[in-house]
Length: 579
Image (cartoon, rainbow, N blue to C red; front, side, top):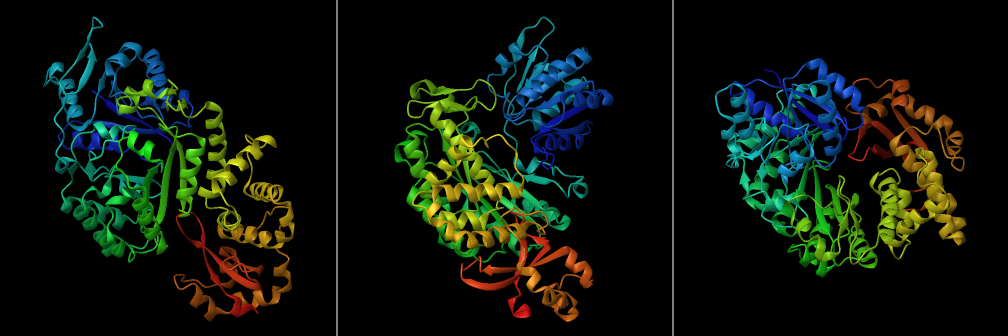
């Protein structure tokens, strides 16, 4: 009997950890199954055809907030193609209200709730006629008469039993890989499903080290820990951080979700020493409104949280990603703006403006009526309005979110946007008004190239500050510097030029012909052929120093073979070789 574990990832670059755990846990115990991974960006008919070609007898669907609608459509359509197939769903989007989901979706034969490794193994044993269906833990199923049955839940799995989920690691070099060392969460935030995930359980550290070494040896690009609060145990998190620092391969980045108020002085002092780009931290601030913090059942000391973030950012070696959530209780537009301005004082590498999603099974879903919380009944179940914020205000924040993502979080405009924000009293007002301006100018839904977005940013800035037109030469060079950080400047905005390079074309030619200098500047390259290096790098002359903003000629060499987490090329000040 062929069992097919099916995943719909949000992007091609992602991998599905859940189906890989199920596969390895089952196969290692003698019960075969197969995996197929697609994305929500593919056409459903194409996915159906691919599944049909594999002829599964049992189709297992991994359901999340980003794919649930498409998964249910897939089940319904594949049922038409293969009426005889058994279709079972699992994952967080079907683990709550499971009986109701089965009643509303007749294409599904059953649902495996919660953690799936043990219950999937037992379901495989049922398929092999080694166990009655009534003894498959956590299964909600429909019998031949249409009656729905709910089996007792499975015991929480010992983390030492989790298999390594990537036996095909060598073929995944272009993917983001996910890793889990902890299950459960010590906190009970009202909007999060981790609040009902049970006690905190840890994978034994020797097992963690062994598996992390596999990632390091394979020199994968990025590993994201999916642990909800990675640093809930100082001893555990420090042991992992120290191992990664001591065995750093100079390439792999590790992403962690942290609670800032649990980071103490010893941890900060250690983190100052790690390689730039080794760690990426995601810290959920959510709000700085004390009434909101209390109501969502967090115990955050906002001042301490922000102090820790500032200290983490000071060494400039850790990529910092901070989150806020719009639509929480007691948070209106003004309050959210205060939260945004407070957090943006830190200038994290990424500032995520999220919107409340009312997840099935969460405390927020149970108490929605008390807050006048109206939310979409379609995934991702996003807030529509509350007693404190209107749909109109949320639309303003959605327009603002777009420009924050495009112009701040993308990292493409870091020097231009940084210079502009340094002159603003309120970063929130800058981005909020930018969103309004794009709507008013008919630009909200129009796709724009990198170059067009530079022009849009310049035009918005000058519309806000027409008296600063004299600063356009500086903005020109900041724009050109940002462009060069990401690509050789071939196509430019119509207000940006590289004419300065023509003045120094002889010096630039001689620069690349200096073989000893090329060997010094590109030590990792075995081949220092001047023509090849000129193709893979770029030397740009500017009239302003984009770092200090001084008005002086300066020359930068951009090396596109080495980039940071935001895609910025390595750059060197080579003015002494040119002028």
